[in-house]
Image (cartoon, rainbow over all chains, first blue to last red):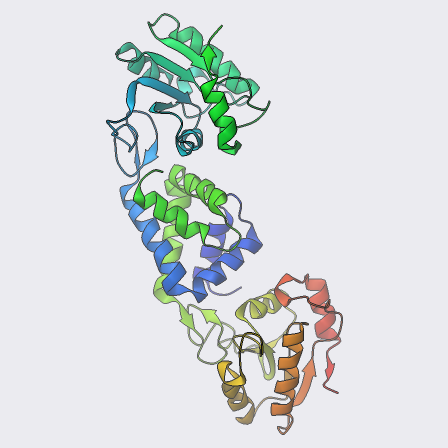
Length: 198
Length: 198
């Protein structure tokens, strides 16, 4: 259908999460009909992100600067470090505006099923940040999934030798829930009630 | 949240039909994480469409060539002309691969409520194509909505003086239904059973 260029655009959009072939076609038609108000702005936005995309060398966040906007923010409390599985979790906690400290993105979770081992995650870099000192508390903000909690326990063992307070998000996370899907009220409660690792 | 570039991309995606703020954020995160396999292909596709976007001067289809791929297709039956309200309707009928002729896009429907009058639609150009001759049948493939059928009746009056067979899609379209939403089976039935305007 239509030209190869339009087909390619439809297919590229259809591969985005939340979009299927039909919604991609409707999105393409919208872009084609609104070249100035929809297509051009999207194109410019993609170009500038594509040109400046950077992974933060400190925390692993995805941004257009390295260090990222969080690590570069001197108003944040550098003694407070929140460890998350994924960038989407970092964004979810940052949106809640409830955590004043810094973050560390593991890039996943330990998983026997998927064969994801400690060396596959950004754990050595986390140990390095903690052993460098200047951090009073490490919040293990893994998802409330089996693999997330397994990862949290593993990190607790790796970090227990350091002079830092280890905390984890309060129970209150629905079982199987993932941070990116939670409302800010739940995130607030979980952050406020965070407690020392038993 | 995040950098202005990433915010701009999120907002541009959130304005697409079928995407909201949350799904746009997830799409952006997907693009940021998969720069080579997702962001770059989408960027290239948008660029080539943006560079070559063209409205067909003959039928009003949106394509990257003028005349569009349908008007340029010499295997199609030029004596058969299908009039549709919108480009999305043209695409829907073309996807069904059931109509061997050419198309004409009105660019909307007559609507007293929205104040859309005949001169706001591509009707004079349609009259021009028909009066130029070489067309045996004009299929009025308006949506089965009140405004669509009003538009069809108006076109039937404008075209009755010409030596062409005027047909409309068979009833079988659900009341209020729009072509772009119908399954191909329904489209096939409606096309096969098209009948002269009473």
